[in-house]
Image (tube, rainbow, N blue to C red; front, side, top):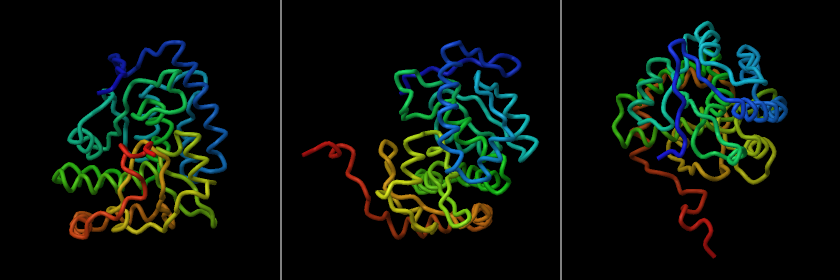
Length: 264
């Protein structure tokens, strides 16, 4: 259960943010703008430019929607702090990206386990201006809406290693497109420059079989050769690939189970 409460939406789609929240947003976005500019992929940077997010206040959802609908037909949908898988997949299937309408507190400025407004807007919305990324996310939602609980577990790994923590090759360098990385300065630097994690070429069956933890720096990232691969992936029989991955089973985890993380 979330400790946060999403803010209500007015009849015109606006949220009544307070002065403290505007200041937190300013501090988050100005810090992260410096971190991502040399590390994010060009599609993300182009999307940020299109969104033209304000730094002195939180943006309003209709401002985001005008850009997304113009570029790819998507929009953002305000949701409570936590939603079910059913709701999540159903929204993506309708080209609606869920955005929790709360902002992290100053006490959790650097790390927040659940996705807040900054994560969703700054981390994800820029990529939704890119047609290949948007098409992949739409197909993903439609498949997830019809999938069984076990199939959804495998699909969640695909989402994790693409939409949340994906890297892409650009002019011989690894660049970031995953929103879970791009909304975190620590993860952005780690994914770009640390020698600790593996960076493997994207292989769909390997991705579907790779366990992950949400509360640690990632031990492995998968690198696409280009973002067009996401569109190509959306045109494949992904559920047949999920079936193959389920038959093969999960790969060994590259991390300790959570309860053992601090033992010894």
